[in-house]
Structure formats: structure tokens, C-alpha cells
Image (cartoon, rainbow, N blue to C red; front, side, top):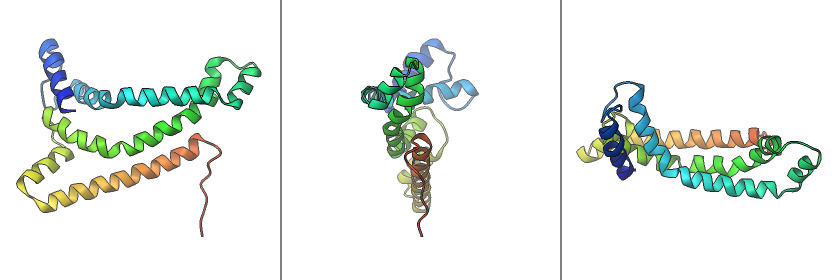
Length: 166
């Protein structure tokens, strides 16, 4: 993340000069940090989605839908994509911790004030209450994202139901 952000700053912002080199100065200053965070895992996500779609196209329900005369695009969007998204949703939930650590470096490279930069400064200054607060907030965020991943599973796959215990 650090090297990708630095290369984007040197290659794009310094050459094109339509992007700011650091800080927040409008919507254009969001593009390079977003690209830095997205490009780091885009290849892996696309490979997992491709593999999941290939597996889904080999399933009987997809062949049945094609046999009924549905178009390939309709079969892919309605039948295959819903099941192929489940591994991708799992990866997105698991990658949250890595994304939070990547945000620390991204905020440092692009000179953005944020929680990642606050945590890094607190570590360097040995500010224990701030370190504890950022770790607690990050843990809370991970729990909430995992809950959302579970709810998204139930929405994407009708075979998965939310059950009451008690």
C-alpha cells in the first residue's frame, strides 16, 4: 500500500497535476487514496469471483435455467452471480482488518487526518488511552462488518435463513 500510494503520487499527481499531492481539497483528492486501497486487492477479488462463477456455471440449476431458454446474461445475473458472490462477501469481511492497517499507510502517504493516522501517532507518542480507543473502535467495526456479512449471506442465498434461538 505504501509503495503503490507513493507511485501513484509520483506518477499521476506530479505528472498530470490535476490531483492534489496531499490533504483534502475537494472530491478529486479522494481518487488517489481510493485507487491505492482498491488496486491492492482487486486482482485477488477478481480471481476469486472468476473461479466462483466458473464453478457456478457447472451446477445443475444453471444448466436447467439455460435449458429453459433464459439468456446467458439473465442466468449469470439471477442464478450464478448470487452464489458466486458468497466467497467474495466472505473475503470482504475478512479483509477488513487488512484494510484498516492499509488505511494507516494510505493516510500517512496522502497526508490525510484520520483514525489510522491517529493510531500511528499515538503509537509513536506512547499515548495508551488513544491506542486503546482506536483498537476498541477497530474491533467494534470488525464485529459490525461480520454481522453485516452474515445478514448479507441470508439476503444473497435464499437457502440460508436467520433463525431465532431460545
